[in-house]
Image 1 (cartoon, each protein chain N blue to C red):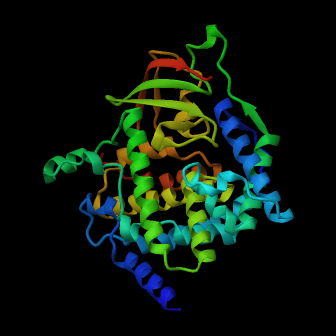
Image 2: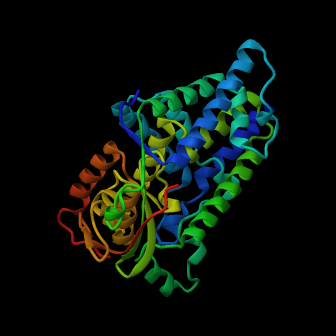
Image 3: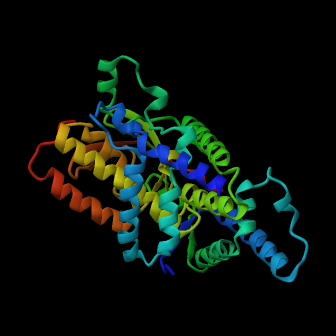
Length: 158
Length: 211
C-alpha cells in the first residue's frame, strides 16, 4: 500500500467520502443480505457503480484504496492573502506557452487530469511553476525548451 | 461459445486499425492499435513490478483499454481543430493544441461518452460476469480509481511517447516539440519520469530536434 501524502481539495474529499459510504453500505448489503442502497438502482446517479455489483473483489479494493487516501491526505487550502500572488497547490494559473494561451490548476496527483487542465504538482511543469509570480517566465528545457509565461494567478478553493 | 467467437473476431479488427496519431503525421505503415496494446502490456507488467501493483489486474486493463476503439475509432487531441489542407495540417502538427477550460471539458466528455457506448455495444452478448469485469477495468483506467488504473494511464501514454520518438528517429516526424510539451504536463509518476529521462538520453543525445 502506498504511504505517500495525497493532496486533495475539500470538494474531492467530500466526493470520495460520499463514494466510500455508498460502497461500504453496498458491501454490507451483499454480505448480510440487507437491501441494496437505492443508489445502485438508478443509472442516472453514477453508472460506474453499477458494474461494481458483479465483482466484490474490485469493490473491496476500491474501498481499501479510499481508506488509504483518508489515512494519508492533506487538504489543499487557499494560502494567506499576502501569498496569493505565488503559484502553489490549488492555484489556477493563466499562462502563455510559447505564444499560446492556456489555464492550469495545480493539484495533487490524485486529482490530476491534464486533459481537463488539472496539472499534477509532481509533473515537471507543475513542479517548475510552483513558487513563481505573475510576470515570471518559467523555462522547462529538457530536452526541448518551452517558456511558460505566468499571466495571472487566482485561488478559488471553496 | 458463439458469443465468444464473435467477440474475439471483433477484437481482432484492432490488428488492422492504424493509430490515428501516426496517420495524421503521414507515417508510412503505422503501427496498429493491437501493436500498441502489445507493448503497453509488456511495459506495464515489467514497470508495474517496480510499483508493487496487482499485475494480473493491470495486465487485464492493458489488454482491454482500447477495445472500445473497434466501434468508437481512435482519436487524437488534434481532431476537432485539424485543418483539411495537407500543408496547413503539417504546420499545425508542430504545436500542441491548447483549448479553453470549457472546451477541454466538452471534448473529454464527448470522447468518454462515445467510447462508453462503443464498449457497451461490444460487450452486450458476453456473459454478464465477464462484461462487467471488462467494463469496470475500463472505468478504472479512465477515471484512475485504483493505483493500477492510475499507473496504467501513464504507461499507456509512455508507450505512445516511445513510439513517437522511434518514428521521429526513423522519419524525422512527428515533430517532437509538442510531444515534449504535452509529456512534461502529463507525466507525474516517478517510474514514468525516470523512463522518460532515459528515453531523452537515448533519442535526443546527438540529433538536434527538428520542431
